[in-house]
Amino acid sequence: MSHENETNDKLRRTIEQLSDQIIRSKEDEERVLGEFSQMNNELVTLQRKLAKNNVSLEAAREEAVAAGESKSSFIAVISHDFRTPLNGILGMAELLQLSPLSEEQRNSVDVIQEAAKLLLKLIQDLLDMSKLEAKQLKLEIGEVDLQSILKYIVRLLEPKIQKNGNELIIDCDPRISSILQGDSTRITQVLINLIQNANKFTLQGSVRIRAKLMNDNERAQRIRFEVEDTGIGIAEEDLQNLFRPYAQTERGRAKEYEGTGLGLSICKSLVLLMDGDIGVHSIEGKGSTFWFELLLEKTATNQADASPDTASSASQSLETVPEASLPILLADDNVINRQVVLMQLKKLGITEVDSVTNGEEAVAAYLSKKYSLILMDNMMPIMDGLEATRKIRAMEQDEMRHAIPIIAMTGNVLDGEKDKCLAAGMNDFIGKPFTLEALGKVIEKWQNTSEHREILNMSIVNEIAELNSEGDQTLLEMLLDMYRSETPGKIEVLRRHIVSGDHLAAAEVAHDLKSGSLSLGIEYCSTLFARIEQLAKQGETIKAEPLLDQLMPAYQEACSALEKVI
Image 1 (cartoon, rainbow, N blue to C red):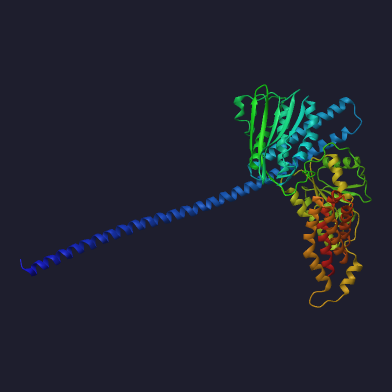
Image 2 (image 1 turned 60 degrees about the horizontal axis):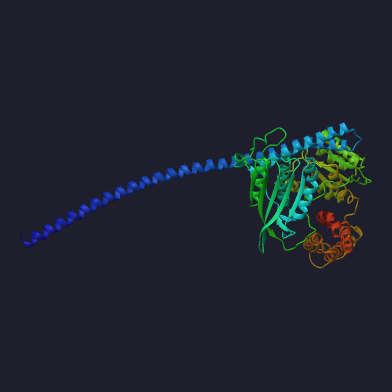
């Protein structure tokens, strides 16, 4: 074969190989394109499914939110609807107890009270469980004074413990800091629940409360609480189910041990909410020890005399409230509750009372007559208590009237309800059912501050307004801007000094605020600062604490009144 033919053959084979490679490449390309197209189609399908799922998830989320809001609303209504008639039952029973009764009648009243209190406890357990399941229960972190908590529990529970023939023993580790950080209310609730449980299953024995220091460092202390009883104990097979909702032991379901079976489940949920541990040791026939441990942070200050909100006396003597010259307005749509409150007020020495059945009537009554304070139910027909309060506050600002104390009365004691009342312009909050003593205290607190006061000294204000100043602003506008920028911060500083008991610092700040207010003709607010200054100088800052809640409303009142003058 010639060289030329050989070259041609090689060239032909090369071309054939290239053609073959091109064909295979094209086939590969078509295959890849086909696979890519298929993958793209699958991706589009997945995107469509994802979009559809997102729509379904969003719908489900909205449905869950709506269900949660509906449940919250339902819980609020149920709470109010149960507590209002209970307030009537307990209120009437308390009034009967203060009347001359035979021994048989007194025993009957005692049974009524015990049954109503049991029903109230069952309702509270159900509401607490609902809030916990809905994750709506939030902690309120503040100072924890363990000694005050234990003293409060002794005052509250010792009579009932002694009624069962039991001895109450308290053993508190002295190494525990006097003031720690935590949720004082929830700690008290868990202890009370465990102690009541121990007393319920113990007769002629003892209930011992221990608080032990388990660990101590610079920032926190781990405290172990134990409630030990000498009662009936718990069978081993029942221990594993003890903290589950509605779970009760065979003996616990007996008629003499009434309850929902929710108490221990609520205790566990609350302890876990506080990042703690809870458990029980028990021997059937020999007694039980329920325990829980919490890590509580230390505070910068260590005031031995501080006490939680819950640590108020439950057995103080009843005192009548001095009747004011102006009557009280009672707004409540429930006829039984109105009757009970009217009788309670009469027992407190207050007979000048007007009553209305809804918020619209309350606003009309306020416009037609002067009152020393208003007791306002929250949930009423036509216009509720919150809306009525907003209307009254708006009229006070428009007409430069002195703010009348408005006390919320409601069976809705869920978290956040008090904040709603204060935001609407109410001054205080009392939850149904309430005792005669609680009603008397809240009236005395606010009725003594309800005398008429001039918001502004108009002669001083007019003098300032007549003075000229350079620039766009008048002198009065400039002084009001300065007053607004400084006063809220100073009021907060004053609050801290009052609460910490720093008499000298409190007197100094109160004097500064009084002088600044007087210079602008702010009459009523300066009067409050003057009272606080005097009490602080006398070393009685604790008596000034009730005045603190009045400062910001009085300050805002004065600023609004000055704006109208400008």
